[in-house]
Each structure stands twice: as structure tokens, then as C-alpha cells.
Image (cartoon, rainbow, N blue to C red; front, side, top):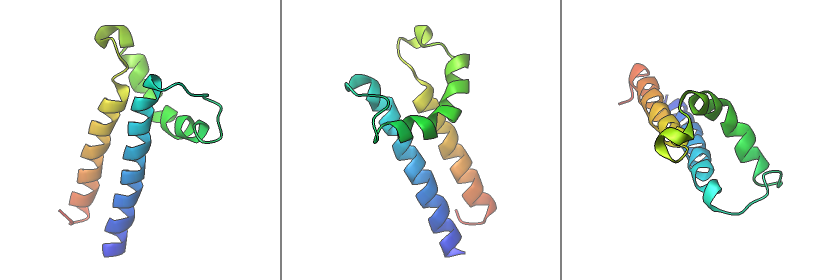
Length: 87
């Protein structure tokens, strides 16, 4: 069971890191098609796009979708661990 907790924590941790990178990228000049940057966009866009469409950036002045997704993922992460009996 410890292996399952470990794998869940690793997967969520990696995705948190990708979302955090995505939140910082607008402030850094980069090529979106770069070999290193493209996977970040490809892996995060499916979750960010629906949130971004629901909350236009004009409301906040900045794209807050990465922060909302991190909050949502943290909740899901905790729920998964809770239902597995690991909190």
C-alpha cells in the first residue's frame, strides 16, 4: 500500500510542478514549440483550457487558471489519499 501512496504523491507532485511552470512561463520569453517547453503545454492545456474559458483573464488581469487548477488538484489528491485510508 505504501507503494500506491508513493506513486500517487509522485504523480501529483510532478503535475503540480508542470502547472507551476506553466504559471511562470508568461513572464519568461520562450518558444512555445521548443523541445522542452512543448510538453509542458501539451500536458497542462487539457486541464487549463476549460477553466480559462470559464474565467476570462480580463476579470483578474492575469490568467488565474493555473492557481485554480492547483487548488483543485490538491483537493483531489487529498480525497484520493483519504479514501485509500492514508491521511
